[in-house]
Image (cartoon, rainbow, N blue to C red):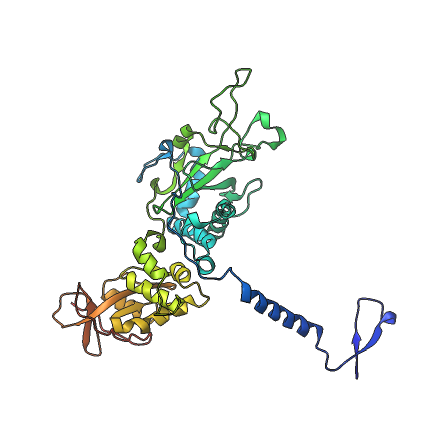
Length: 412
């Protein structure tokens, strides 16, 4: 038997001496063992991480009322009261690129393809769809390091401004604290604040961002008058109102209005039959595996960038990027190379005049051996020239392109 002191936060005179068995585990060890056993038991019956497929959405993600349709390449005069905000965005390095990727990442975070297999906004639950606006605000805040406002979400150029997102163009909901109204009393705003209004449609890869000054008159009113013949504000159940259709002309659209290059959701826009082949790929007499699905992904999607989010969604495994790298060995006999961002791979992509992957991206293509005189973009490895296959050229095993190996190219 051994003796141990159990120290409590009590006066020294009240310290207690107890004896315990030497073979008894320390409490923290027992707790850790319990946690591990609990996780193992839960994993045996968990359905959260079970591979599943989803149907093609039957309804559109976004509504664009005729009154809110906007054009690309708009030329607008910057309103004086919005100039500080517009100038601030114009001064941010690569602001437009960062903005559109923040929108893309916000939706991808909610889709959570690695754990759910979802690849479309329509697969989200009602609660998740409601949260998308919060995710957009959070990601834009972090992306541009925007400070908190005194009364609103943001402070830009020393001025309060709010961030609003809607999947429907013109559907932003404005709370009472954003604008002056004598009828609101203490619930009303101290001034007419500005808002950054954002929108995206993953079905069409469109998005837009604008800035507008919120006023009582620019918000919606009911068509019917009250008993006294007065106008009635069109509140929803949360006492919020949407912008009126006439307010569209008061919005200053950043970067010229409608944008048509929301980063592509590859699985959403893939041919349905190709997507089905990818998500159900399997070996004979064996169920679909992450490796087989990723092999099929790189068979089906060639000569274009495949991003990390697509790989995670197709693999639905913790090590999906590793499976993407594993696809190189599986596909080499079919003449297909899977290029990444390291070593000789970017050089090979440039030589073949393909998009060059960055970290977290891959691109596949089928190669064939060619002569020095072949006019196609090509590279040389160990004295053999390689170019992208055309049509039904015979299949040859692709060359091994280890990360540390150099190639010669491009060649004229």
